Image (tube, rainbow over all chains, first blue to last red):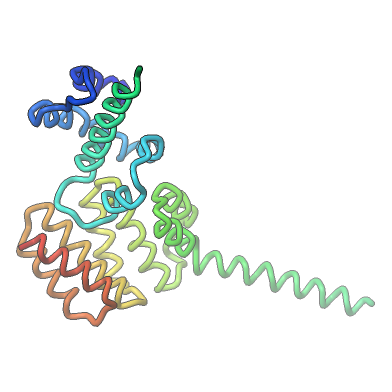
Length: 98
Length: 148
């Protein structure tokens, strides 16, 4: 299963470029994505790094999440960054679809 | 002519011996550290793995071997392993005070993540006791604020 398959049911709720995920759905999507990211981090870390690169998540942000001192688990922060980016991508796609 | 060949052979053998000695004593730690600073944890990990044994590494390199390993484990979310590696690095000793302080701060952060505030504060105090550069001090203070 890919990360997009996990996120698809949540992202598909966004139908217009004025919409976004509500807090509850965001947290639920995060809960589903986090174990997937955690598994990748511990196993094939290259897949996570490639994904972050592909999604154009800033290098500074990635550096902070991976090596910085923060209170949240690395997998949770990465999942959050990925989810936020995917929501923005979805909104952009809807906005410029026509 | 014959003497020149002997000199050339001696030079080649010396070069090989120095290279092998360098590899054994220095390992690939410095290169791995450079990758880490360039935000390439995977390359850092792969490079570090090329050092097959820490037994022959010089004391400084051994300390940094565990230091780099600690960072990689943190990135992978393996906090227990990271803690052990950072502690090992401190036990062996790091050349720069800044790196020692950063290791203390990282340990404090990990303990804080694991809800062990007492140990986290203990490590922060150790970090603060060292004379460090401004940006390291800022990081220590940031972790201290996080611990609360």
